[in-house]
Image 1 (cartoon, helix red, strand yellow):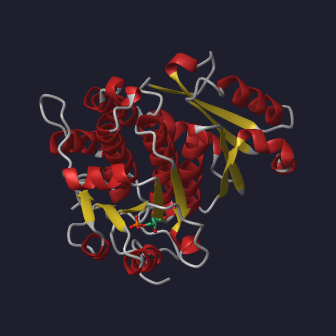
Image 2: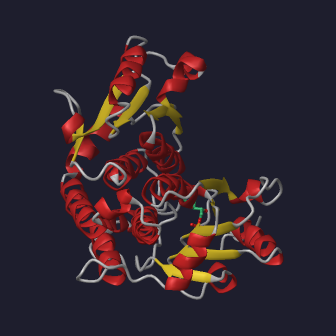
Image 3: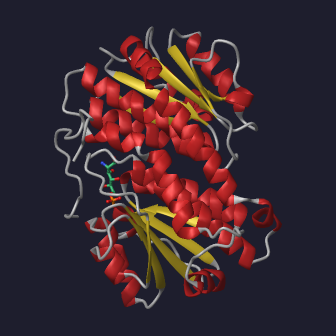
Length: 359
Ligand code: M6R
């Protein structure tokens, strides 16, 4: 039931701070210890490489999962699109462990990979929002997102839920592996900060509505740019915008612009630059200058500590590995408003199904 909300997508965007709090409650004790089955942690600990397999938005959550697992738990991690992995698997490490990220737990492309993984006798974990879903039943282990039903075709709270749970998992695994970064990572405190930050952003949705109305009402294409973790964010931001507004949108690594994409920039082309990574902030700003010089209409989405006068969207500061959890919120809202302003049914974009049960 969408209650007073006009669309599920908006309701689900607004629910994200609550999803963070629910995950903290489910997975972290008062004393800070993490409540994840020790068998899962031991299996992960014994593996020499993690393979995250997923599709669409869940794949994008996997990109951030790689950052978390490699930086907090120090385990090499690869992220794969399920439909690619299924037919062209990479050369596997000696002791692989598989994580399937899936909101629905029913995605056929991922199920097909899991069947192969099971045939080869490898251990796996499904992170899903749906208890007893196929991928949950067929994997060795399951962790649930407890995000509540996600009805809108465009995935929102499952993305942030998946990343938050990956953060909790990385913390637990890092502690087990005695990684110093993990000891310093107070995941409950950091996710609480994220929840508050997301709340601030959903409360300011009118500003995003105005920006969308000025930037996106008639454009044929748009670009999101960012580097490092911001490149992970912009890939998801671009998928959100394109799937509900039908604006051809791509998320690019800003450093790649000059290797080809910049030729697409014309007078008035919308470019949204995401800046939450302090190591690359300067570089993305200079890439933004380059597209501005070619007539692009640039909107800056920047963390407060990295923001400059005139930046249109300022994000609350959170832990550097958790910035996708706040940065994605205005991007989801941007997609939502662009879709409505262009006259579409935002909950049911054309040609798409909520769960893709065919390969
Ligand atoms: O249920 P899953 O997480 O496995 O679904 C994966 C994708 O089909 C899904 O994320 C899709 O890309 C959404 N339309 C994204 O908003």
